[in-house]
Image (tube, rainbow, N blue to C red; front, side):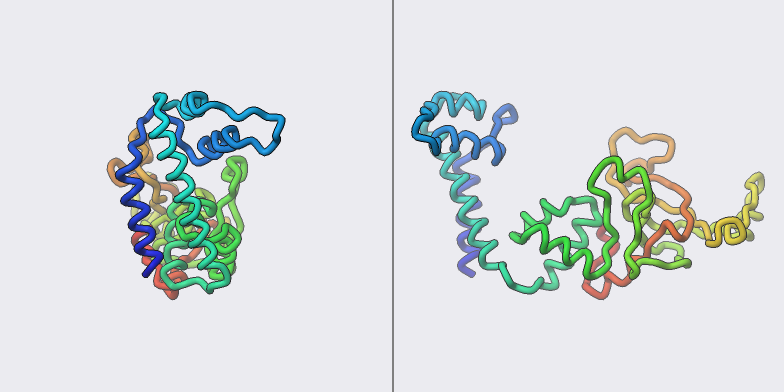
Amino acid sequence: MLCAVYYLNWRLNLKRGLKKKSHEKLTSQNIQHVIGLLNPTETSTKPITKREACSILNISYNTTRLDKILQDYYDQKEYRSKRVSQNRGRPPRPDEIQDIVKEYLSGENVSNIAKGLYRSPAFVKSILEKIGVPQRPTKVEGRKQEYYLPEQCVSDSFEEGEIVWSATHHAPAVIDRKLSKEYQDSKPGLQTVDYIDKYGCECYGIHVRQKPSGEADLWEIPDIGGFHAFALAYDLGKLKHLEEYGVDLQKI
């Protein structure tokens, strides 16, 4: 209860005290850099002036506002430190597991998820691995190839409308249909392929879920986002086991 009160007071003070303009460089990293220059650890190094500090932050010269910016940074850091300390050693709550899974599968990175929950990145990673959440490659180069699926996700059969994971596109997807021989035969002009005979598994039409880009191409779905694709069963992963942890797959 005290944490909630502290957090609300901090947010109210932040809202009243700081109004960031688009050109201002008020990232945590830059503010921390300025603090270091104002308070150098080496006695031989001369501290910068407050005018120079304002220039680095790209704000108008105003010592009162500069002090507020620095104090807000300290308050935020203190609040985060308290929350992390309180959570240290505590097992994950059901709502934390749900948030971790939902945010990660929706495209958020581990570091930002950890910050939002006042947990460590190692804590978030351990949850993802333990309950069998498909992993995304962290480097851009790795996204050009398929990624291994956890054992809990491996399957050779999927249902229409089922929400799955695409190991090729590293994103959630919805099964549109199975490309069975009967379905292909019913489509004039479509060459029939026996996927089981050729690849050893079924092939599915899927809708890969992504946020609308604003510049829809041939395959992107306007307003909804994402695109249509085809995928073999071994490149798709089941996510139904995550519902055991209270995860609403429809919100991914």
